[in-house]
Image (cartoon, rainbow, N blue to C red; front, side):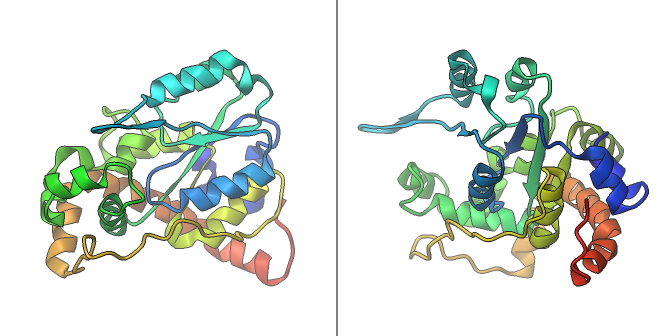
Length: 266
């Protein structure tokens, strides 16, 4: 069972055979993919819910805890024993202790158009909402310098899978077998509704949180040249996004037909 089943048979069959309404639901929250809104929805649909996050400490410089330590703290506290969902800015690899602690773990995530996500990530990182925004502005004076930095490249792929999964064929096998579901921000109503059905509900999204504020420091001119540059530096993200998009497109017509007739899937 896994996300790859969505292209085999009907959407109804996918939901019926892949529903995970009792297991521990783990949301791998990639930055700037509308995940804050989705986390709020998950808290309502699947309590008890835990948001696992790094803690920030303010002094002469901003320091923060390691996400690995925060995951270990939640596990050691026993909180995951009764938990039905959790989320955080942790990768598939970093979440391994969660999978070890709860053998019934089912993971899902959401992606965003790679070019739009990079621009959004850059803009957010330069606002006072981001704890280290001053350092970011100093280190990356332009969006081009941000795009060229190795730590900003292929961020979605680095969250979703190990570094040795690289070719489109390898990516397809990995996401098809290791994830219960992957949605897209650009297909959010469909993605959210299918996810809710897999969780044993039939809901449409209702919230949107944390829209990035416009400031003098985060203006970006979205040009064809910039888009080409971002795409060139994020080819693994593009391959991942395109694979997921094709899978969801295969289910879109059937999903629309169900919604139009108000007939619930599942």
